Image (cartoon, rainbow, N blue to C red; front, side, top):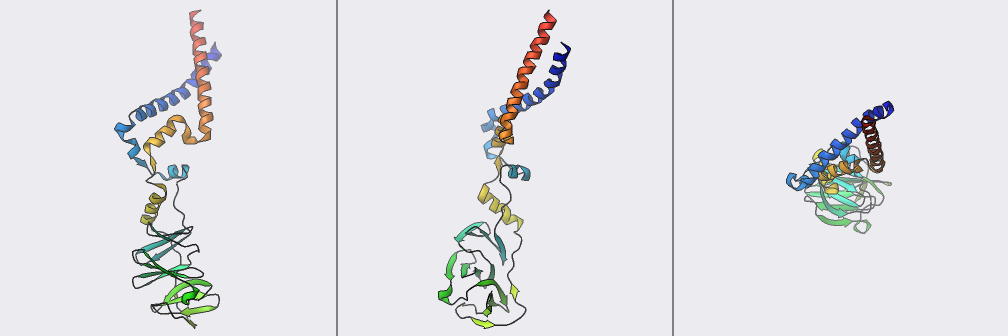
Length: 238
C-alpha cells in the first residue's frame, strides 16, 4: 500500500501540470475566434527557428544609394520587392545617376531607381567578358575582368582597357535590419499565429515527433495514477 501511495504522490504533480496546460490551452482554443488568436502573431526568434522560419539568408547584398539589392537564388530584390530573375550570381553593383547597374560574370543588368528592369547588356552590347567586379572611378563605371580593367561612360556602350588605382569597388554588405524584417515577412509571413502555437502546445506537436511519445507517456502515467488511486481507495474501504 505504501508503494502505491508513494508512486501516486510522485506522479500526481506531473499529471497536474499536464492537465493544467491542457485545460488552459483547451479553453483558449475554444474561444479562439473571440480572442482573435488567428490574427495575432508571435515573432520570438527561438520560436521562428523552431518552426524553421529563421532570418533570411541572401546569397548577396549590396547597398546602392538608399536601396538594398539582394539575391536569393535567381530572384533579385530591391529592398523587399522582387524585381527580376538573374540566373548568374551578382558580383557587385553601382549607381549611375538614377540607374542601378548590377554586374554578373557575363553581363550588366540595368534597373531604374524604383527597381524596374530596363535591360541586360552582354557580349553583344560590347560588355567585356569574365567580369569579376564593378566599381566607380571619378563617376565612371569600371569593370574588373580576368584580363584587366575596363572603363566606360554613363552610356555603357564603349569600353577601353585601362590601368589605374583608386577604384571604388562594389563590396557586399550586411542587410539593413528593416529590410531583413520586411523580407522575412515576404518569405515567411508575419510569424506564427498564436492559435497555431497554442494548438501545437495543446496536442504536443510543439516538440514535433517527441510530442507523440510524450502524450503516450502522459497517458501511461494517467493509467498508473488511476490504478494507484483506485488501489488506495480500495485499501481504505477494506
